Amino acid sequence: MIRVLNSFDLKDRHVLIRVDFNVPVQGEKVTSNFRIKSALPTIQYCLDHGAAVILLSHLGRPDGKVDSKLSLIPIGEELAGLLEMPIKFSENCISEDALDTSLSLKPGEIHLLENLRFHEGEEKNDPDFAFRLARHGQIFINDAFGTAHRAHASNVGVVSHFKHHGIGYLMDKEINYLDRVMRRPNRPLTLILGGAKIGSKIGLIDHFLNKANHILVGGGMAFTFLKAGGRGIGGSLVDEAMIPTARTILDRAQSRRVKISLPKDVVCGEDVHDSNPKGPYKISAIPADLMGLDIGPKTIADFNAIIDQSETVVWNGPMGIFEMDEYSHGSRAVGEKLAQRTENEATVIVGGGDTAAAVDKFGLSRQMTHVSTGGGASLELLSGKRLPALKMLEI
Image (cartoon, one colour):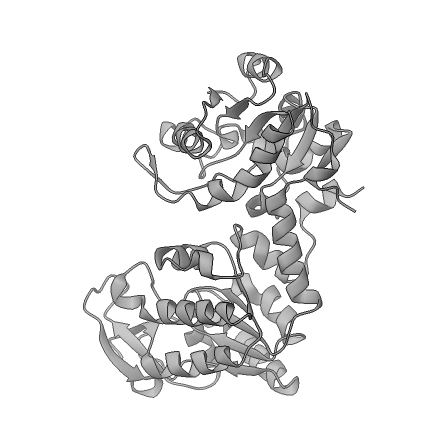
């Protein structure tokens, strides 16, 4: 069992919260505050119940070195604007000055510590670094689902220093939605897979071969499956090393009567930077000098027809290079159909990472049942794996 935030007496307590504020920043401005907003219910609950709040987060990959471009200062400013209150900030998360600021906080105040990954001890789960972080609070709450699949100092190492520890509302929401999908989904259950690589999603595919009714495959990974099935793919990118694995997956799906649907047509370009789309082409007719960069209209229609019949859908991975408008039509069309199904009371779970970024770009985030804040974490949880950060919090 893991305790949830509302089971603690927070009055006059210092609550150390691991949040996931790893958000896109350009210059000194946050360009997407989705993850920050997702953490607000936990933060606000603590403030409303008489606690002082100390926030821990990382940003980017500074590799244990201070990088001013990855400072949390812009995140602090964004958070202050959302909460309409001042936020105290310390430029070194384990300095004595930072500790003094935390210990002197009054109920209703917030202290944001600088980027955890400015220190090598964070990703190494260094015991001394974890101890120095733990000194900031009396109760530890992990609300950073996006890092729950990592065993770092701020989400695993700190826990042993607290008698009182648990999860926040975002973490609880993520676990409940994703766990419910795997344990008792309404059927038919459809998994939509996209993105470039199969390797990172083998566990997810294996798990869903035992549960799903349909699996729809788009994005770059579709060409590895198509080639494994003996289809011509023109000049499309393919992961040659994964072809035997893809062939095995296709065979296992057939034996388990799980329908895997692959693209029938694609929109192409000369390379991933080509802003002049060609086609659509049938898969067997893709020219040798072109590569598929988005699913075509026939595939969109086929995929959406299956989605229309599904009561539960899990979407992990875009259908094309959605960052370029020219190759975003497949992802947008699938997203719009999923939003329509949500309105008609189907359950639609959107994996984090690029998929969450895609639905955010199309303005569809609020129209889904749940958009996960964690790409890798949602992948592992949906694959049936135990997440290190959650395992550590069990009592």
